[in-house]
Image (tube, rainbow, N blue to C red; front, side, top):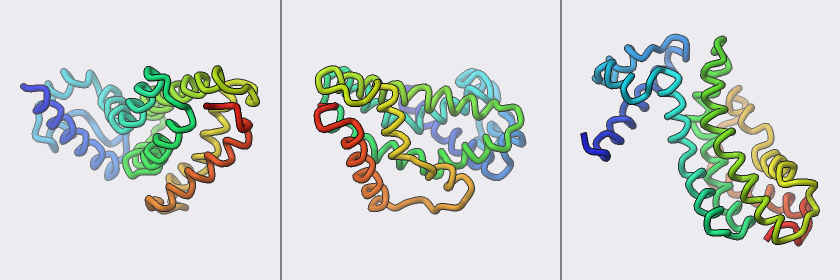
Length: 203
């Protein structure tokens, strides 16, 4: 199977997995059920993903891919930290508050095994957030050091950007924000972040 055909087939399979998890919960979904609904062989799913956790990890990775790719490119290019955060923040926030991430987090909250939560952490936070820290560390190295460390500055940025919005989305206390609302939140977060870090802390 050609790479593009395989990628398209994987997207179809993962779309089925999202739907089944929404309808049945994580514990109520098996690889066999996904294979049947996606009209794929069970062997194919195990060959491509290894097991159900591998499938969910791939789904989380795909959801976070745009943010991670932009961060890696900016780090490699030595790009301006604040300018990069301005570009990736709307994508990151939209992803975290989007239907796919919220569906997985709702399912993880009811998963007594903790398997889904571990997959989300491994492929999501543990993969993307260190890239943000590396980006900020590069900015601090060439700017000022008003923040105690790049790790602390990263926590400041993420708390300002995300706050309790993802929890409120998971508990259905908040509707999915519009692009305008995302833009307002990003602008406010970056303004406060600049003040916390100092005018010369990041370049």
